[in-house]
Structures are given as structure tokens and as C-alpha cells.
Image 1 (tube, helix red, strand yellow):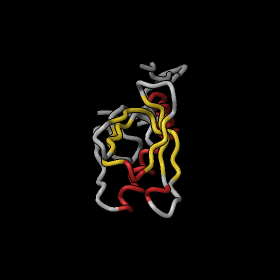
Image 2: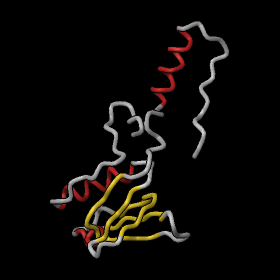
Image 3: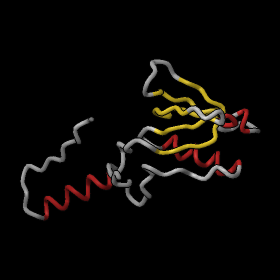
Image 4: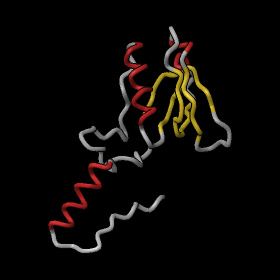
Length: 127
């Protein structure tokens, strides 16, 4: 499981509750901030895995709200109404986890305190 961002729980592998409208809306707000892939299971049983890059969440009903994602296996963006979704799962690694500016500063000070010179903190290799 990936390291969570500072003071945040790890989400990879989690399935948020979908029992109430408030839980559904909250789950998609969290998914919008997540920097990994999610898997959406529709009420008809089909699943779509991809990166959620947008959401329209200010509709009066769940049918008026939707998410937009880049599916892993398609070249086109997909829009899905909240009302068509049965389940959401955080399936991909959150690429931003543990990479806040505060984390970088803490690592820099740790290396400096250890006496290192020419300190560099290089980015992770992308998969």
C-alpha cells in the first residue's frame, strides 16, 4: 500500500460507504483529490477503471451530478452520473502520497542534520 500524504489515511484499496447521498457525494470529493486510479462499478454490474479528473457535484439530485474519467482501456473521456454508480474503489497507487512540500522540507533538514552536502531530493521514477 502506498504511503499516505502527511496526516491523511491511505486510500488505496479502500471502498467508501455508499449508503446515503451524503456518503456518495463525499466519496467523489475524496476521489477527485486522489491522484491514482479508481474503479467505478455501475448498477448494471460493469466496471470502469481509470483516473477521475473532474466531477460536477452541485446538482440537486444524484442524477444531476456526474464524474468524468480517463478509462485505462479507452482513448475517450467518460462521463458517468452519480445515480448510475453502485460502488467506488480506490485501486491505483496515489502518486502524490507523501510528496507534500512539508515532507520535502523535512527530508532536506534530516539530510542536512546528518551532515550531507549538495543535498538533492530527486523525484520518484514514474511507472
